[in-house]
Image (tube, rainbow, N blue to C red):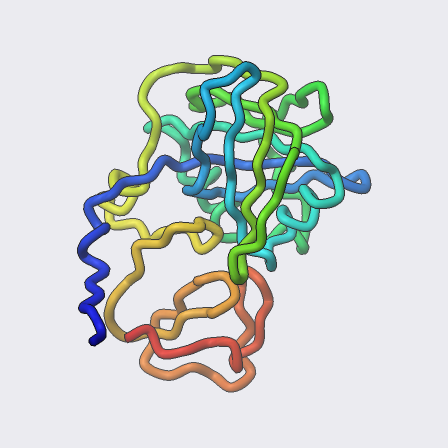
Length: 211
């Protein structure tokens, strides 16, 4: 006998918003995620991060073997979230225009309105469907501006749609079409046959009705 499945059972959960970044082959990569978590209290501690396989940042972490995670503060600018959450790194360096620092492994990170950062070395990885879970061992940790961290619940409460790069998405319900590759939602009753996803550049054939 099949059991009921109601997504509302876990909608009360909230998630932090983070900027994960790395450098590979001379290029800087970064995107907004909601899937960073500490999983051990050993020293050095270990953390996990989950990213869509189709993200350019995922390929870069596979190549570099390192990543930095910066916790977004509640006053983080919409420009940062728009750049790293809604735009693809395949079309240019998203760090251009922002004051950027670099950790010892070469990973770029931002400091303005950022709570803190943790840099990690990848020690394990696991495929989960169209996602990759990285297990990282912390190599650096630093408090930046401090203060409270921005959460997905607070961001969505401002009337903002979840960045499509985020692993956990609070999906819009209503008219529109959702990209099955990155989660971007095209808000319209019809989808042009030649439409290209502005985030991951997937064709219209990769979109499904957002029912």
